Amino acid sequence: MKIIECAQYSPEWWQARIGVPTASSFDKIVDSTGKPSKSRKNYLYQLAGELVAGKAEETYQNAAMLRGKELEAEARSFYELTNNVTVEQVGFCVTEGKTVYGCSPDSLVGEDGGLEIKCPLVHTHVGYLLDGSFPSAYFQQVQGNLLVTGRKWWDFISYYAALKPLVIRVLPDRKFQEILKAELENFCDELAEVVDKIK
Image (cartoon, rainbow, N blue to C red; front, top):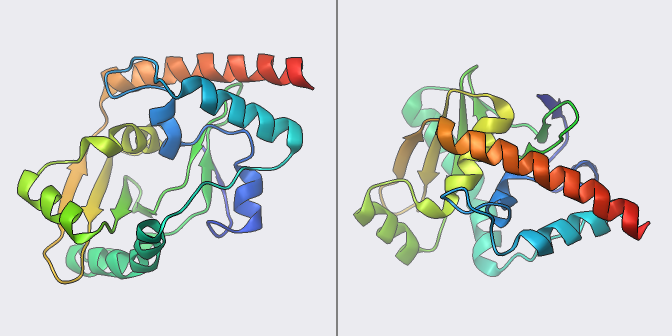
């Protein structure tokens, strides 16, 4: 794995992501069972277009997503304080070799861990607390983070300032990761073919 040092959402960060499948969008490649996602073709074409145009397509961000970004630093500080750790913020992590895919961790923790921070609206957070388990909506993303970085665990935190947080430690799902890795290799091969055709 290679770490590209840059501030997330900076011009350098967007540049590094051009045409690269990223963990936050791995759900567009495979579903949680490892089957091809219905969004696969659109994501393939998006990345091919980015590679030929030389420009990353910025994703839509609604008010809740922008609010979550603003609260992320507060959630990170809370995590550091309650776990007596200092986390590392990095830009973009990418695999090295023929097949390149990446992730943008919210933080890396020590030598073995990582951190995924979500600061959802109150009704979503309450739902997470009542369920008490890792939300399946982020399964592919967190397993992707683990795959890209080779880390041993990833902590998921759902944070809402006035309520207790939900912190769940996620371990690698080796069976799913094998499927994900194979699908990413196929996806990247197809991506190269599409790029050749539309140049």
